[in-house]
Image (cartoon, rainbow, N blue to C red; front, side):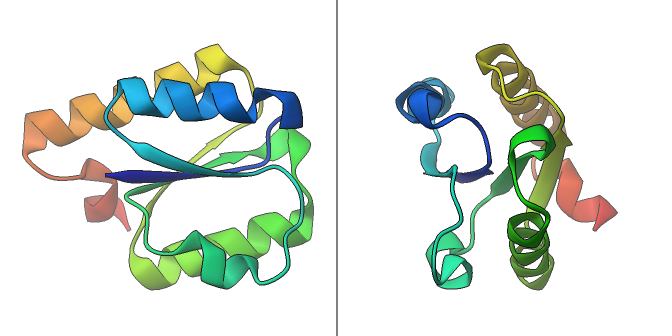
Length: 107
């Protein structure tokens, strides 16, 4: 299972990865605009976008790639550790209840 996090605070990258690891996810974190972001995103199970700390162009690029792959997208304004915990709890609960990712049904 994999998560891609777009935005957030640079100093919290390691913490984001540790939080994802506790839920059984492998995380890629992009806090700054990266060249060839499209290729680096891959096909994650969940895309988390911290909307307060990310550029518009980076958000658009990530959302286009998520749409192509049918990836579940979670947008949240704040980039705190608690916010990430809540997103992952919600995603894990919806998947375990339905046997598959509930976000993919809405796509």
